[in-house]
Image (cartoon, rainbow, N blue to C red; front, side, top):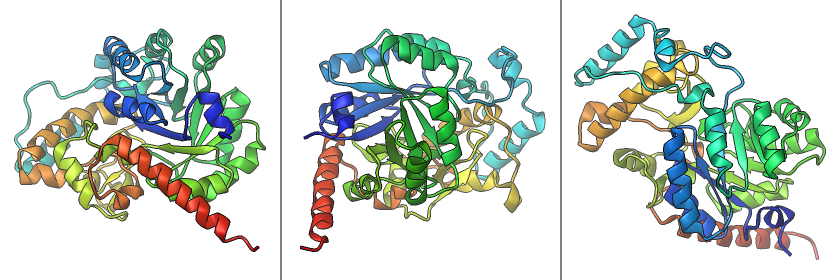
Length: 372
């Protein structure tokens, strides 16, 4: 008998895979899991193209969409253009970056150096409208309670809305707001995360919401045995992200993949240096530069920090792949503590297969541990 969440989403195995790469999403869905496309970075027109590609490659199998519509951000409610938001970036911050690059042998870039305000939530409605024109089976939101228009759209179209949380109090608020699925994400996770470990957070959230909605476990989960442990605690399945960054289909920058494969679980840090909110990523000279408690610069609030940082970080990635030592010292990307178990690049389908085999082996060990 399939778990209830597998029946709900039409999947064979309750493994949810968040990725910014359409190829990973399609591969996981086709292998029996549930791919979720991280859509926040896409303009509406490109998102429509990406979802159309996925539709063509999954043959009706289910997949979902993840949007970041933060509850709090600089300029909220002011309907500011990207240019108006960029004008709020102090000049000394641009100088700071120029000096940081110079220290690493990188000349300042004379081209426009401010990216779009992808994390401001200003494009959330437009992206959601595009998504609803495709056969998605889930909408997920991070950084706060989903906006009313997202929850209403989900109910109108019969599409469950999920929310990522890092504290049990947040889970209660999400359920009260009307979400259909909770992703309890521990501090081990890559990207935006709180301070409570997965092992503690998952049972806390399950107790706090008293079975109101299913709970997926997230944070540092890169193997089936970890997933089995979370299911043993009451989770309905696992929400994963980092493990897909080293798959053959992923679009991760080449040198960053090398750093992932060589990294230990101690080589990550929660830093606000890329987005303005604490997000776990690889330790590098970049994260050190934005560590105010260790003599670094205080990051700007979201989305100003990401508007300032992302164009520079993308340039660093290109130079790092070309062998530039200064860029390689600066290179970083969002990844969880599970990176210490990510030691080989492989196809996404193989990762799903290994998850299933490892999960089954773990459940057998658990069964054998019971007294006769």
